[in-house]
Image (tube, rainbow, N blue to C red; front, side):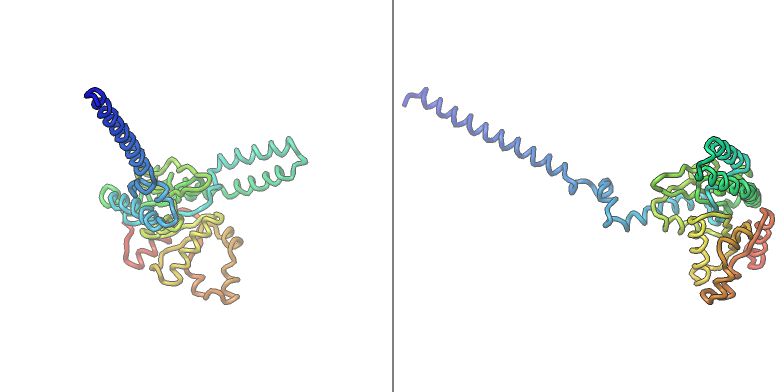
Length: 307
């Protein structure tokens, strides 16, 4: 074999080897890319699918609690008056405007039963709109009661939404006091009201953690007329006090006529499903001054001043 032929064979062998190595390198790079692109390779704290999985619910619960807790500690907010109430109880001016719109719509379609019913509901909300004013005035009383520059202790806490929650936050805001809103992620998210202190408006994923934060710092609970959410929060607090899981605290239901129709506590006593003493776990009030007097009297008796 000539030397030229031998060289050609060598070069062919080398070229084939080189091509094989290139193929192997390309294949290796593709395998690495596949590995790096897999869900398993994502760092746990950056893996959204993993963090949202049922198996990661424990860490999510902890994070839902811890973020708000650390920020509240940072702001030295140790005591709260919690205000619950309906999102639908708007300030009187807005309630009246809603009624007028409902009346106009019903007049334009007098045969529409749903629109006629809407007028009835709008009128009822006008009749209860004074509770917005009561909640605002109460928030202002609480906001003006403490020297926040020195202590930063007693703070109005609400669910952060509209209606009664807005009113209480707004009253504290108008008094120049910090005010907290504990909002919740819902299917149709509610925006926070505009009167919460920046940095003190929290958005929770879990109702349970949100309710935990309502009560961790609560020195009193004030419940205005409301629906399922208000009832849920009220009854959880009553249950925790009744069972001595938490220490007794003032629980004040604003609007006795509403609450006596909404919940027949005397019937529960008469049926033997709660004790007569359980009926004394709460009180009724009508005005902001009356609410505040009840709370301050309670704390004075216990020698635990609020400011």
